[in-house]
Length: 215
Image 1: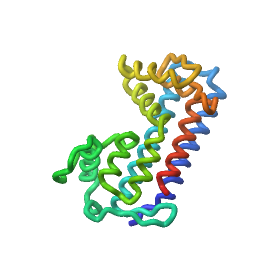
Image 2: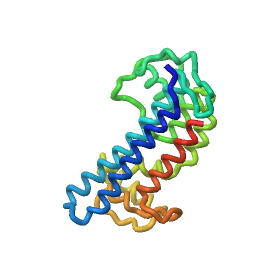
Image 3: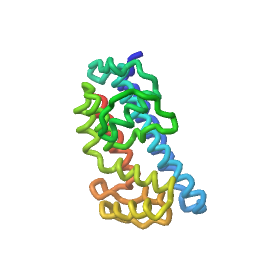
Image 4: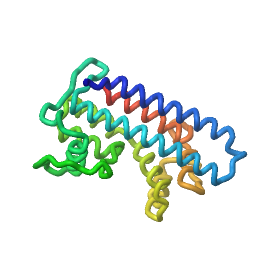
């Protein structure tokens, strides 16, 4: 069945918009929350945002391989890979994301799925597969800066270690108001171009870049 890239994008925008509304509610009531409740909620928002972006990227990639339609009506498919199982496509994506040559097709375990939202790896996969929309995807994801920081923040929330905290500290130079007690507090950093919370900038960049990716 042909995957409508518009439908995949619409679903992403709906998810992100709902999360953004939840952020607004959280911000308005934050003074009345205990730190443990605040940090847990913020971590949940960031994780959900990252998962929504990753799901979109995965659906777009699989649609580009098995049969997809851009918003301009262009039909995209890669016949030599279109009949592969999900686990076989996991393997293909994993190999290509590492800039390795694909010499054979194997099945990867579901727990070894690629980090689909990683913009550096995503462009490499589309380029290696040479999908008709590869150039458009590569240009779109290469322009991302904020989504990379979203990934770093999500990782720091999931794995609080000296390394992940060091990564956040290195990112401080791109923002203002960068104090944080917990990695999730980074959502309240201020992005200088928009002069708005980093969370809002994540929302805007995801919507902008995803809209370009489906053309």
